Amino acid sequence: GVGGWEEGSEVVWANASKVKMGPIRMTRGNVCEVGVDFHVSNIVEDVVNGGDDEISKVKGWMWEFESGVNLKRILDGGDGDEGGVEEEKKEYENLWKERMGKWRREYLGRRLLLR
Picture (cartoon, rainbow, N blue to C red):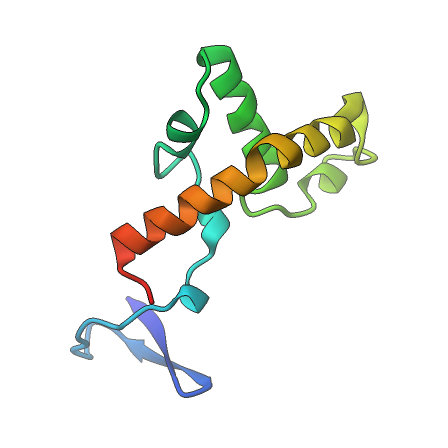
């Protein structure tokens, strides 16, 4: 397959089937922190001390407000605030966002040994 890696300030692309590459050191700048969500880790279960309903609610908020946020609501034809979405976003940000960020940074530090 084709892959790329940074060399200086440019990205170098190579046909990975023909090029022998060793490990590439990753830094925090190489990682999309919000990519560490409930699909690839136990982040919600570890941070939320609640029952299944609370965990499901926080997972929904994480998906809606953090996990690779894009314009999916606009593409779906919504106006951006059906059913009190802004209030839910504020609740998520006030209660969970900082704790989730701290958990992610610690997780990435353990898993990837980033500097």
